[in-house]
Image (cartoon, rainbow over all chains, first blue to last red; front, side, top):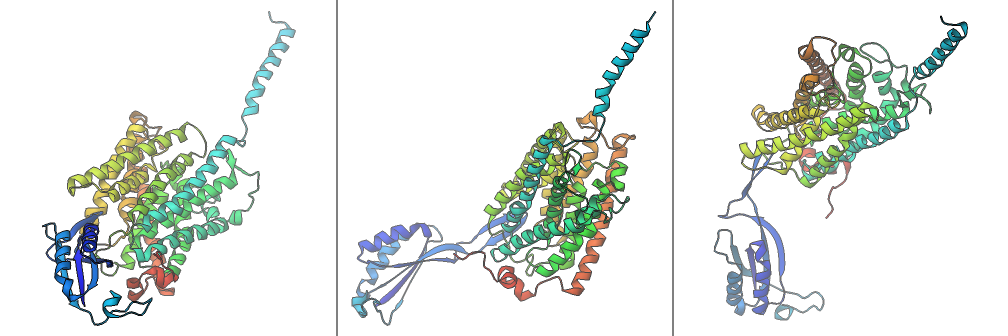
Length: 112
Length: 432
């Protein structure tokens, strides 16, 4: 099983959600995060004091799926989240050791 | 030839005509209209502190310190109330000499239900003046925000009220030497704003800069509060200025009008200043401009006419903008919420222009000095400004040094980093 963390622009969350549903992924976790890469922050000014807010607000969509569907899921996320402008985000794919469904105690594939 | 009968008739007629005249030449009686207005004005001025000023400041500090500001304003309101009735009112308005009103009216001696002050109950006059005594120390809070010990703050404000505010109040309004010189300070340009503004600067310099200032960004955490606070200040200020007439009459009406005019003009002046020099107008700017205008029109509200108000507002908005942004940045002191930049600078501009626009030739109600024209009035205004600056500057410094020795003024660096709400009050402003 693999964990896919997709850091995307916040307004793309709904599009990514729809795309994941169409790709057969029925559950996900969304977190509000801040960060920066090549997209710089923005300037703010309060009574003459200028601040550079480096961190930009993003959303992180996390799903855990079986290895066989990773490529299709990543493709779905990329297509939905891309705008072509700097700041579109990144996707990280990693291993997941174990998955447990709390209500029933099922593990592994049955818990996804 | 006049007969004896006609002589007597004429004498009786003269007496009857004279009687009503003598009947009216007596002391003031209670005016229901004046009293109703002054009770209302008192409520409006109290609202300026809680929650007007409290929210104005609270929105500008970081979220970890939001409660500390609200706590300071509320505590000052409560403490000053008690100290005012115990001694403050007497020191300010108890008669006395040119410098000190004395303690003959301590504990509000000789004030009963029917005691009058002019055409209003003295209880109302006393409470109205109390609300001014409340807001003046509360203004200073902005200068030392986010780093002062609560105990030190209470000690400082309590002593400052009795040793600095009440005497200066006496000098200008309580029958003291500045009032006798003919100074024009209708609602407190010197007594309230220059006083608090200079004391604020002294506090900022003595306490020192906030940890991380100016490299670390410390943007306002909730400008929504600040705008709500500024709006409450604007509306409440009608009580502050128009109420200072102590009557419901034409002067109060004009004070209402010039207050509105100067405030709006100043708001625009700051907004346009920012637009030109920085590139964009801001909501913190327009709100600050409005406050600057309110400050500057305060001493002039009983004497300036509408056109004078336009000039006073424009000057205050523009120069306070420069003081709070460019000058502060250039000199490097951490007057966190611009108490000096808005209240001292705005107060001085207002106090001096009051001397100009009181002149009847400029639409005013008349100068305070008997002779010498605007020039002589400006001299008196300058004396008042200087006396206030010097007295409050020196006394505030002494009080701070003494209190520093007793309890210490500043919180520890760790407390400052974690935030005053949790470290001084065991509370969190936001439990979302």
